[in-house]
Amino acid sequence: MSDAIQQLQSLHHSLSQKASERLPLLAAQPALPPLTLRCADDCAFSFRYDGQQLTITPATDNNGISIDAKDWLGLSDDMEAVPPLIYGDRLRSAPGELNTLLAWEPALRAIYRGLPVYDPLAPDLIDEAGHEHDPARTYGLNDSPTTRRRALNTLGYLVVHDVFNDEEQERFRHYAQQLKAAAREDDKHSWWGKNSQGDSVLCRTLNGGDIDELAGLYQDSRITQLAALMPEGLKGANPREQDGVTVIYKNPDMSEGLSDLPWHRDCGMGGHAIMCPTVIISIYLYDATDEAGALRFLPGSHKASFGFLDAGDRNAPRGVRADARAGSVTLHYGDVMHAAPEPQGHCEHYRQSILLTYQPEYRHHRGDRHYNDILFNEREDGQVPNMKDLVDGN
Ligand SMILES: [Fe+2]
Image 1: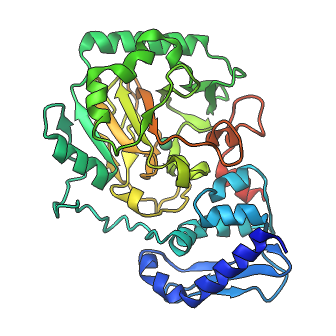
Image 2: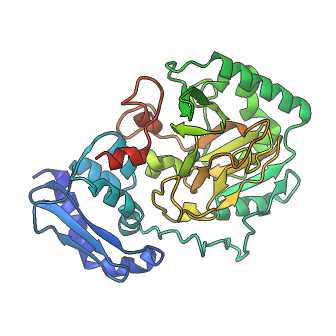
């Protein structure tokens, strides 16, 4: 028997003994359909949660989702996540079972990692000093660093106004247009989607660091002042490398691709255990109103776990809008739940922002370059398939 199978057996036997201890973490979790995972005939476990009781037991039949032992261990230590296993076609399952596994992801993280399931109706907004933070409050560069640091750590995001002046914004917009004009669908450093007319539309460019002034943003004194609010040990990306400086272009009327993003965490494609805390700095080139497709956050969700919700799900929480204007900067943890809903109206300029990334140093546990690369593996044209289409087509 392999080491991985032995580890999984002993882990689940131990978890089955203390399932009731995990129940408080599932307080916000509605009942789930039964789930069985198996990696070998003698290593299969069933998870049941009816909203009251949690049980983890050895499976008694041959049903269930087949998963590689290492991938399962990865789920248990937060190196893996469910979506990349689906995108990577790494699971064998009967129709409908992948939807069940997606629904179980937050509960599995509660079971394996001790993270509470996030409650959008009662988020924890109290900081370490006992102060409650207003999730809609915005800040300026002159506000107290301690207050801003605590707000960032408690809410998972921070909005700072009036960081870049009009001339700088004008230059940044010019650079964004320059990168857009040079991007091609098959260049592997841009993301594309389709609008309802079927036209391919640019959603982001990953090579902003090719432009010197954008590459230099990591050294800008205002950015370094904001980066000092982040946890210690995070390192700014190499701006000259792919993803070092990303530019986001929000578009209206999108029907395909990763443009209108449902609630997600950036480590949702795996690697949470090594890439978090990651903090993203966004520099806004235009006002981020609801009409322009503002980013939204679930405050405090980086300290909890929240499951996959399709963009069109009526039960999805609304969250809090990042109330940024042209020249504002936001910081957010990669693992706070955030969404990029479709623009709620028409306007001259939709949201555009320049993204800088701060992370611990880590190596991808499967040896790929970047966790999001899993999204491109199946497609040569830069289009990214929608998760719901994948699980429903299963
Ligand atoms: Fe994101």
